[in-house]
Image (cartoon, rainbow, N blue to C red; front, side):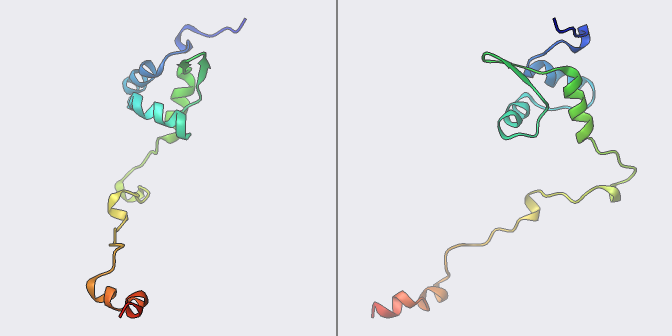
Length: 106
């Protein structure tokens, strides 16, 4: 028989999310669900269709992802939407006139 302490009993996704929020590291249930599929989330167990997490493993995962800083200059660079610049994939009118397939069509 596996013995666990009462405070480390397996919890579902919503319970782990609430527990992490109380601990000061909020993670939405949808995020935990997504991380189960793509990887990178806390270790979990499955019993049939039911997913369960050990709170101690969830807390350890959250602590591993937490970065402690003294000031903002220590923060790593972000890779948000401002880091990517989209360019148009379609040619402009001037570019279209110079395409080789259009010269052959004359």
